[in-house]
Length: 160
Image (tube, rainbow, N blue to C red; front, side, top):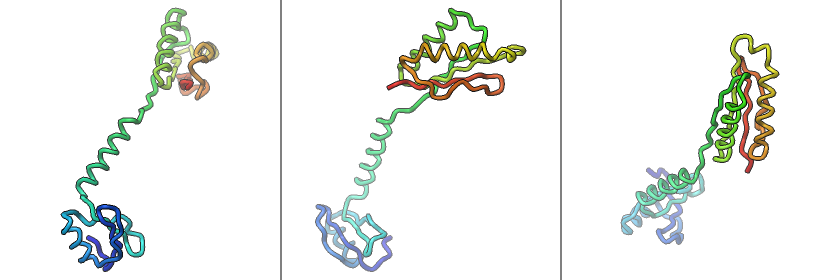
C-alpha cells in the first residue's frame, strides 16, 4: 500500500534503521515477523514503523473504550408544574430538583399554562424565582426564566 520508492524506517525497538527502499523495508519487517506501517505519510521521506499492526489496533480500541468509560454523560432532568401548584406539591418538586442537582444533573423546570392562566404569567415567575432562591445553595441559574409558547422555563445547573 506504500506508494513511494523510499521510506524512513523505525524498528520494533524504536531505533531508526535509516532511509531504505520500500522492498527492503518490507523484507526487514517480514524477517521480524511483523508489519510495515506508515505512521507519518506527510514527511519527506514518509516514516514507516515495523510493528504488529493487529496488536496496535487492539491497543487503540482499548484506549478508546477506557476514555469512553471515564466520560460522564450530562443529563437534563425536567420537572413540570403549574401556576396554581399547591405548597405540598411545590415542596415535593423542590425535593426532587434538589436530588437531581446533587446527583450532578442539570434541571429544567417548566411551568405549563392552560387556558386563561396565560394572563397571570407573574404567578409562574414568582414560583420559578422562589425555586431558584431556595436551590441557590446547590445550583446556579444557567438560563433565566423564559416564556416559550405556553411554557415558562428555567434551567438550573449544579454548583461544583
